[in-house]
Length: 243
Image 1: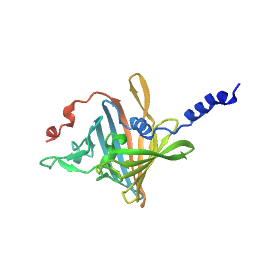
Image 2 (image 1 turned 90 degrees about the vertical axis):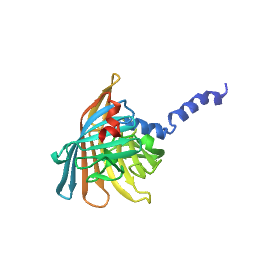
Image 3 (image 1 turned 30 degrees about the vertical axis):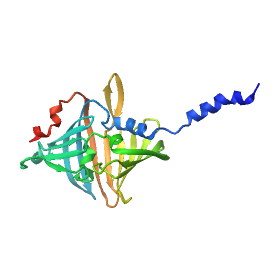
Image 4 (image 1 turned 60 degrees about the vertical axis):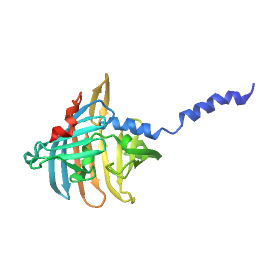
């Protein structure tokens, strides 16, 4: 009997078992736990910004989102209640009391503390970034794939992201955000104590995102709550309705 033929199935199985994951598909899976790829989703975010030992800002928002659009409405503080941040595709607008009409804004502009406008929208990294597998590492003892994300267009919130995705859970655990020149701007850590019920399955959903400035002692924590999947009328994302 030819030994080569006996070994062939084992060799094929080994190659298949240890094949590198598809980086773009892994990114798509990670997006689901942060609002991407769902037919409609609603959640609340409480933002608390700290500069040194001082709390500099607190806000509470309700976010309603579909695949390629979202609207964030301010609930607190009272002076900004009713303000809306609309995102449709790669475009964003802000409307608040005192403005005659919505104004175009950039996802990269700061919303509160270290959080940018783009950080509060439904995460859809797979549409905004090209992903490449850069290696493997551990975060707090958890095995992770390390993805290098490169922005597909200038309207992405960040030019480049180094993203740690859990091997077991397929959720983003840590991120580093870089400028086009390669300068580290911020870091972020993610927690997933929320869960969604969708199509008869229970899946993890982000409960907290903590964003830290890379140079100074400042951070913004985003706590996510009241999360639910539901249909959202298209009129919610109509710029004309905002006016």
